[in-house]
Image (tube, rainbow, N blue to C red; front, side):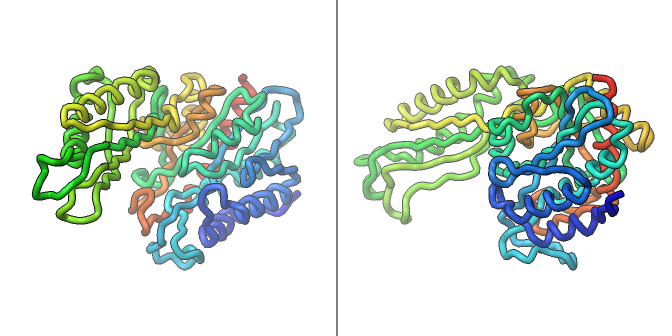
Length: 376
């Protein structure tokens, strides 16, 4: 029998050695070494992804479990004794915890193969923070043959030991927007001799909110946010161009088809009203996380059995995004929240987790995989 994994020690080691998207080389090696210690045969995919399978005693369906592995370009301020050793890089979203959880689930399942029907594919995915990892792994074939997939994310707003589920839409689609407003620069004292792209950009910025209030059904959640706006280089010169970048979030997949056209038309029209022109780039990044009804019921049932009804909660929808949704475009899936205790939110430099949630998550994922292979 392989030695029992010390999941907290694994998580702390990964926390000390965080790596950003597609740079998770050490992380991937550590994961592979632990999988080998369980008697599994890991393989590397999409450079820093790791995949392994657990074969049950009987033939049956192929079920996948996924964890993300990347860190963020943030300077850590948590004060923990195992803080990041790499300046400017930190596990500020708990992906180190997710890796430990999936390794724990792998240990549970590998030690109970005789009770397992079918196969469980373990997917350790890079580059979730850039929303590029899942797509790269799908293109590499890691979802081929899979009939169901389960994943989780820690939630600092829930105490450790609590979990939350939601059928249908859980997280939003995330699209990226880039707008370049083109005018004619000149002296700020002679604006009549210029075509001011800054004023046009201001009109576009406020005008785009009519998408939310007047173009799309007001019962449909939709957020258009500009996070980056630049124009000019000094106070007394009207520039030639202004640049805006932002994000568009929504739950209804139908909006994915119509929003680019509606937004481009709106932006171009406003720009023309200010005698400017506009170049609009609209990039689809990830679709909404949409939980399959049957798999959500299965996952919820496992959580009630393991934790009790008092610790299983209904999840609120979030306009945050997760590239787990890319797998759900290919196969039915269920994604849920695992309480991690806070007190700081995701991407905060003082972010920490309650490590007691690691065992809870491992037991839950193992139970879900085992039950799915039994009933699918």
